[in-house]
Structure formats: C-alpha cells, structure tokens
Image (cartoon, rainbow, N blue to C red; front, top):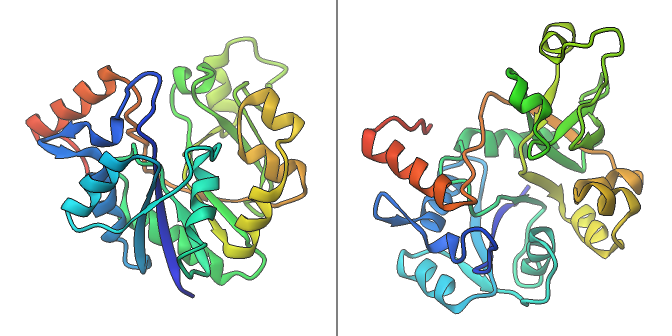
Length: 252
C-alpha cells in the first residue's frame, strides 16, 4: 500500500489568522506538523495542501512538499481529495496543520489498520478522564460498537447515564471516549465521501464525520493515549511555546 499524509493548511482562521505560520520555538507550526508526519514509519510521503502563497513558500523553504488547492474548497477533507489529482496513494491520512506534537507512531497505527480489508476509514479516540472533557461541547464524544466501529459522534454527552444525576460518577459507571480529529481513508472512499452533499446530522452538530455515518460508511476507531494539543487561539500558541521553553512537551 502506498501511503500519503496530507496536511491541509489555510491561512484564514477566525481565532488565529495565519496560524500555520505561527512560530513555536522559533519554527513555523506547519514545519512541526510536517516533520512529525514525515517521521511516521508507515507514511511514504507528506504533502501540505494550502490556498496561500506565503504558506507555500514557507513549506518550500524547509524542503517540504506542497500543493496549491482552490480557496473555494470547504474543508480539509476536500483539500486532501484535491491533492489526489497530482499524487498517487492507496491510503490517505488527513492530518490537521495545528497538531505540532502529533505522535508519529499514531499515524503509523492508523495506516496499519487498513490491513483489514473491511476498514475503509479510521480515526483515533481517547478515553475521557475528567468532567470537563465529558461535558464541554468543544470536545466531541464518540460511542462505538463491539467491533470498534463508531456508532455516533456528538458534542452532547453520549451515552446518557439515566440512573445517576452526578455526571462525575458517570465516568466510573461507563467508559466514555473523545474524538481526536485525524482521519485515514482508502482512496476510493475519500473520493466518494467528498462527492456527497452535506448531511442533516453534519449540519446540526457541525461535525463532518457524520456525513460518512449518515451515508452508511463505517468509521473504525483507534484507541490511543495521545491527547491532542491543537493550536486554535493566541492562548493555545502561548501555551505550546511555554512547553517548548520549559522542555515539558511530549513527543515520540
């Protein structure tokens, strides 16, 4: 299997404009993500997909592969599919450009699951361990079946534990999971998914992966201990820079 990691990188961002170029420890964030993806043993090639010339020039300056994509594309998934017009791959990993400390080993695990011919799409999940992760709508919860395929993703708390009013106790009663927003697909599935219109559930929850579930596409979940350190705000950027300065960040 030929594997390709696509890193969508838009300049426009409501909370942190130009965030792929934001400096972390003196290095652009997009370079951190690119280098982590390149270190994954089962990733054959990494490509940044952008609609911005400054991001393109930055990636080229550190020797990375980059493709210009249309600014009209609605999502990172659409950018990943667009890269296939000029790249060959059997498995595509869609890695957001704001994950500077992504575990390379996790990306390889996501590729490895496709040895199972029944898997066409995969995404990582992590066990929820505190009340904020359980109740904060900025975190996405996921429930899965006994074969580890997702049943549903939601900003709400799912499942609802009916007999206990204290949500802190819910964590002791049931094993809850949060979603880590990284995806892997077989090529044909990715092209099929991006050709589908937005679904009703997707529009309601503002969760793109629900388009797949609503159209009968199964999503395999890969449990991990990796906890996303996404950078979406100036406060997030300050936080990760402090991790670098204090040498307290974890990287495989």
